Length: 385
Image (cartoon, rainbow, N blue to C red):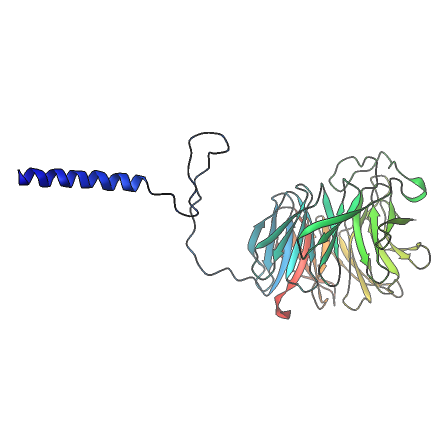
């Protein structure tokens, strides 16, 4: 009987161990999997990749919005190779670097948000809900306040970057310069759709000295002036069709505007607006369909990209005279300069490339592969850290 008793004891012990194992709770971070289709059912946890060394970001890089594939490509300028493709929101359309160079902000016009990417790690550190269609951004010199244009909602949103949240907005007036509201039937918006009524803000620049924001509007082809202290639009200046970008260059009160025109009337000049002179404008001829604009670090040279004639043009900001030009190809668009200003990087939307131009002699040094539909560019230099 002793032998049978030992067998029974062993069988009971095996059953006990089995029941104990089934009763163990799920470990921390391990979701309990259900079989239903309601809120209680959870998908299996994705398999984790083995831990490894974090990918090092290049010291000198170009960030490129890939509009169609919803990514931001990072090109190592030392090798010309794309080293990262960072998934972001839908239809990324604008990029902006923080004053200290540690972050790049991405405006996603299709998903209504702004992403913040660390230029040190290449990781997305924040996603900030914005409204509907953010299309352009400006940042203060302290790097703690971001202003974002909403194309659909006709407003400028204010973002506190310390708390990574929108904290208010400045609505544009219903009517533009001289009560403008309806655009001509000929025109299309920055997304290729019929323009429709409304201000349709497309470009922004911040004047911290005067505590004002200037907004270029495609729908009413004017410049809205927002007084940040009063918290509202206080004035509108006449401008031109197809406003793409605006910058201050040369004189602190001189605003330069690139405006491509429309299907019936293509512009061949940029606007030079004297803000202290009540918005008086001069035209500086550069070639047909000017789409992007940038200033040399010392503010003496203005660089303009023309889409129809496919060229880069340099202008003396004091005299307005052409200092040089470089023929491009395809459909050139956004423009970024190196920190020293000795190189210009120009997106080629049609061919999925970026031209690298020596601004000292206006020669193309090389052409970089940039992926599908490169829409916006930002230059980043980690060697300053």
